[in-house]
Length: 193
Image (cartoon, rainbow, N blue to C red):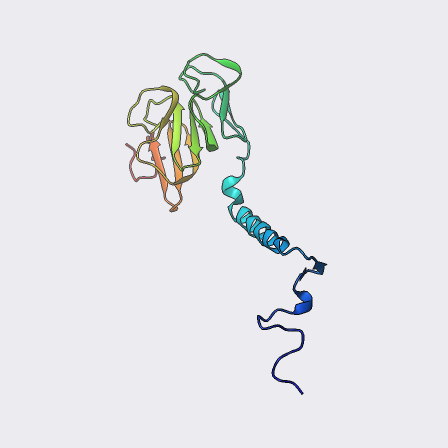
């Protein structure tokens, strides 16, 4: 006669024969399960956050007369023509071998066009250097820069691009921002100024 209790089940609802079994593995070490659970939780956390912890995917880009490279450690390297400081090494000396861009790290994307260079950092900020005749560096001036300057008042950026004398950014909210030369309406603001 049954008394409402299934055989081999203790008061806590655990099968006495399976107490130290998991996936067919028998152990007499209770700490094994604690470590296994911690290991599984760590794997889940790593899987969820893998994209933010992973190294940067190396990239290459070209300007009008210079080359830009993004290394997996988030540093930017450039070579080529440097008459407006577009290599970002603090000089206007042309370089036939890559030099590291000064004071810039944590970069996730690069772009170049004509004679200015653009970088997107992991914090969503945009940095630019080189030719700035039309304000395409976005620092509120038209002064050329031989080292990176942060684009003023812009954050939450997820993608960047460069045009001839202008720069474009896509923000995480889906809006597109552009600044610089607008002779043909390329900034998309309904004007040509």
